[in-house]
Length: 167
Image (cartoon, rainbow, N blue to C red):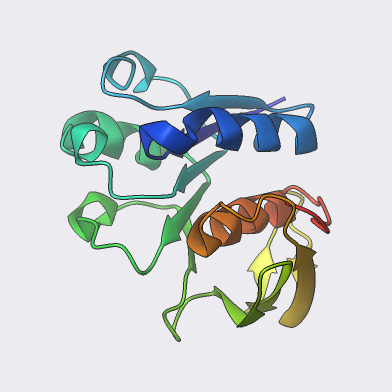
């Protein structure tokens, strides 16, 4: 059982934690907030998922660097402007997602009911198994969730061998 840390905005916090907990039943999901970030800096997270540029959390660069520095994977939104100085001199597998054409995971098409996820480069999952470049269809159950958020969640689930058909 490992820890997955999530940085997201407050309004989606409960929904994101609920989706990840349901899909990743053997993992501990911890959502970072301004109050708990300092207390979590000594915990080893397998994966850190950054869904948004939450300045209240990311401004604590010392704690964020400590957390990311101990993690194995960083899943980050390439469309957000985030201080990438946080990643200097770190040995972490960075997986980008978003609409940016250079993102590791992006979309081929998006509509109300589904999106076609495009993995553009080979990714090693937590079991060191290769996830080859491919397209994966994802059915959207929660149509109010932002597409970038869905991309981040699906990318994280793929790392844990979950075949996300619905989000």
